[in-house]
Length: 492
Image (tube, rainbow, N blue to C red):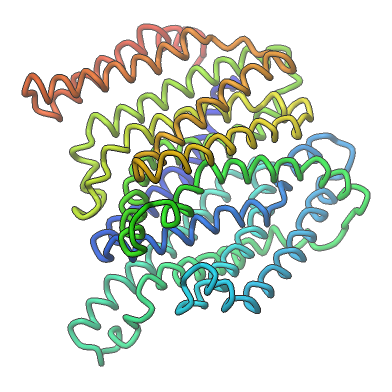
């Protein structure tokens, strides 16, 4: 199997759990947005933004460190794994205890003093997910993509099922007959808290199912190896934190930056967060690519044609991302029903957010230069610089332009990171990327999107007809410029 096909097949398998599975999970967004008012949904968005930051800290960058030292051949794979797992169990156990003890003052600090239980529920979810991530990294390193996908899908199915059970079935039963069996399981005072309860139960089940991966991983800690791993991995924490700043700071900070009262700010946060979910196809494809791409890039680095393959990977990655950009923007009249009518005033930010996610995906591809050359600290500087740009723009744009300013801050931030990473990559690990072709596809996507606006707004075309025509044009051009060559080059 050729390297491109191997990477594509691994991405497809991981995509079952990442793209398909989490897309099913994101189908909960209609449940939330058709059930809860924007200020209530804003609470969920806010807490998951906080969890995004903490998830990076609690992983300590050791996932990438595990791949690096496992593939190095200097230590037995089981020792590398045990070293990572034992540390994560200890660190996350301490975090969970702290979350329970300090839940009340933290809730007061976050302006949710009436819901301190949200704090330790989220702490428990984070601790279990961080420990589970080590086991999932092991499955990825062992190329056990099928088990990885199966366990992820089970977790997602349980989470979805419990959300539907509590928020739909139990709530409706309560409204019909509060004394019924299902009705007694719904407490209106908990409300959106059932979102966290469902997640908590799904995360707990996941750890139970991962028991075979834990069984031989709790002994064999190597202190000297751990010191080397943590020196390599901690810059990844900085990179990860900078990435979370870029991805989630807007939702954590909007209620503080918007110039309205707290209730209105929470409503605006809910609207923005719901519309942000419409970029989910792009986001989940990038995540699936990361799952498959990171071990692939490390494993293939010693091949003589590695850099040519990496260049080809970026080209096809951008093609698929532009396809997703067009799929959502050309058919936004359909995708808008993903969120409740109270949230649709924010649809204008969706194209900007999709383009920002595309640039993030390009950055993920370009970032191989610091991972393969062990210059993770230098890579951290790029991420921190991007985060600084994002923070400055959020403070400058959100008070004036509202959540639209947050969307544009994303776009400028990721664009600057792509530029910085490309320049540094040319120096430390030059890959012959075809910039004209990659940039041409992005420009083509923007041109087709702009054409759809003209056809619909000025020429009176039906939006779906215009979208279908322009999507067909894109697919034909992809086949002409790249598809035929790929068919000739890759044997069956």
